[in-house]
Image 1: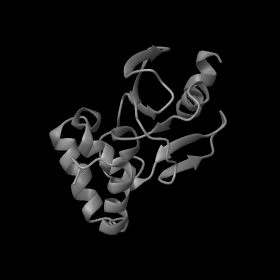
Image 2: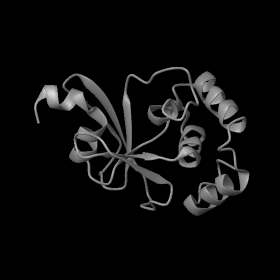
Image 3: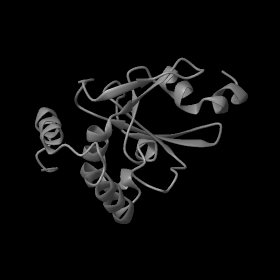
Length: 141
């Protein structure tokens, strides 16, 4: 895939390069209207990579985060020109932002994301806590 194709649909291109990976944290918080800031880096979570790493593809920084689970219940599939991409739903995204603050772009953005989630129509504590328990991430609770 050439640079032009890559930048026409970065999310789709990255998900083709890393099958099974999905976008989460700050990268997709803006898509859900949870922050007014735009992410300049892409954050992909995947159970299929060996370890966390940061890579550059055509000078675009991509954070690859190893996750221990493969549950896709809270992953949304989005069509796009390069074959589509996956992103975390709002509940999975909030968990990721709380769990690892560096992927929220810092404390202020994390607080903005959580505040906006709490006043959004997607705010459902039962689903949120079920998602946390399912992932066995007790530090988030």
